[in-house]
Length: 273
Image (cartoon, rainbow, N blue to C red; front, side, top):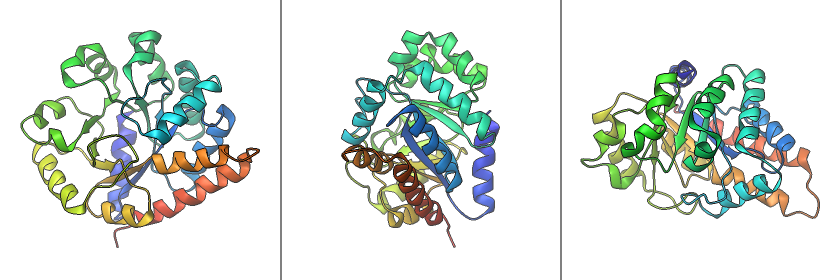
């Protein structure tokens, strides 16, 4: 499973580009539309997918992703439904890394052991659980790693000091550098700050490192692609979905194509030459 992640970064590096990760919430704006969006993202150059597990209290997320989570829940999306979506995605896209991102509460309710088993059966490669610090590794991380799932750690500007080795000790897959302190999609980080952060991260790990939070334009993505092994975009994609949902009637085909066009612009921005 984690081989898909390492192969993704190796392939990007061989082609002198950064890997592009796209975050979307499972089931937003509907299960059918969400599946079509995933296909369109892969078709338009997304190297890996971060699939959000909708949760009613997404405390680390900004307004756009909070709204996406709530839209999905109102459409009936559950963790079981998210795993079903992952399984269907894997059947259609055998090589694209798929990361589940979210909070521990739905996993706890689902049952940790059942979740790990079902995630692996669904072709999931890794997990990003934003509210489980290393001190809580016995809750999920240890068993997930033993089973073969990559446990992807978030590194923030406030964890670049002595705490960094603790955060990275059991990290797998790649490191996700949160380029800003705060919630998703609200502001951007300075290039010099990101360069300094990556120097520090690479002192501690040989895992690929990606930058996320606050990246909205192809120009920003190009700049960061020259610093990072990968770039993750979430809020900007979710905002396209939100805008489409605000129309008097949702034109799913138009929405899916809009997401695809935006993804293509980001994919092209990953080139370093």
